Length: 151
Image: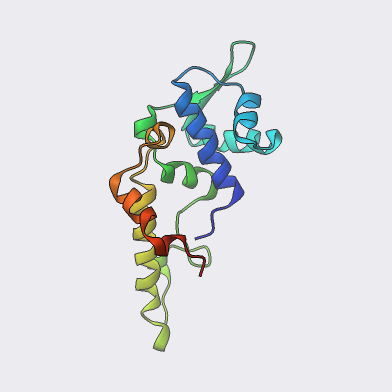
């Protein structure tokens, strides 16, 4: 899986909002806290607002805040809001792709990949990230030395 800058920035900004505890946070403060280009962040926050994950208010007392409690928003929710489905094959869901001959089992491979992505991204909430307390199964996966190889 390739994690785009857009998805990475979106999760980082949302984690900052989770850490802020519900009050409005200025876009400039989010950008500075995470080293995100401000104009790029504006577009990302617009996507998160459109997905109803973030709310905003203009003005001196305005800013951005999470639309739901941080423990009800997963990393998968954020990624989907800015990138679309977690796993597609040529832009289609894996269950809609058919192969013939020797490649026929690939559909099951792509479906298994999606299931494993969900097993992590749908179980890690913004509250987990903001508190630095990831679920045990995620910590266990990340501790595996093979997870750190780049092959």
